[in-house]
Image (cartoon, rainbow, N blue to C red; front, side, top):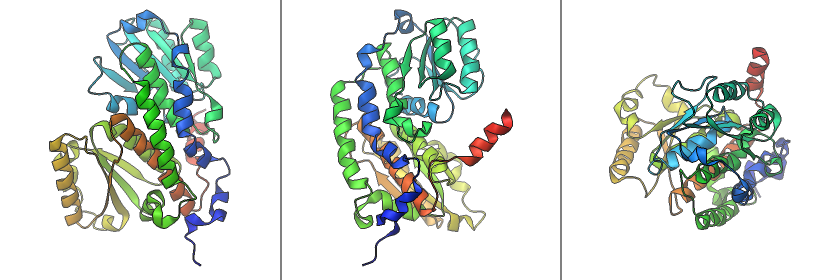
Length: 356
């Protein structure tokens, strides 16, 4: 009897660094970190700030992107994400600066730490260890420690559950967002149910993540979404880049309607290469839902392949995690279809080595 490649145990031997185990550990990452919420001690000064800045690179910045899009209609202060060496000029003693580095050794974040210290900002550190924790201890900055046991692959991008929850927890303890424990409990239950459907033991014909991975094999992926899902889609995109070594780009509604639709005519060969993935939600503003359907129509009429994915869970928090979890499985399966180990990132490592 024929078995699809993704239903054959031999395909999973490529996963030498346990990336699949990190995909499965998402509920543990979320729940394990959330249990330590009351232990996170942050001074009152962090409540009395005028702006919020999260400094991080790569996988360590993903959590902030998710939180910003998810909480955009709840945050009463501006939140800026910095992927650079320098803090914005406005950052001062009335700023809350969250320094995020999974390794604790990211040079851009360490450089920003010296600026935050010089400007006497309120600082909270999110890290797994390294020099950043040492800097925090020297300055008596609160540290939210990431737990490596929740990320068997040791890849920063696969610690997304901790990355998102860490930023949420800091903002919650500072009084800038409110997250109900009951919602977190429901998210964990949803994710465990989702894993039963998307896990490697679920056959290809019954597994939406395996089926989408096959559609995206040898394709350049263009991802489209809106509102609360944009951060989660960005995570999905990054994991396609790093896990599956696949070109993927993200465009947001309604902005893309003002330019991208006219940019699909040439080169004509793009129709053989591009595949669009559109993320839908019942929680979108009605005008966004209308735009989404029209966008799909225009793209299809121009001869491109389109897959529309609709979030099935209820509530913003649940849909965000549903999308992130789905992306983890799809990117992992796509790596296997490409016959590569999803963990190594040789070109990023090469680039870093040349910078030294």
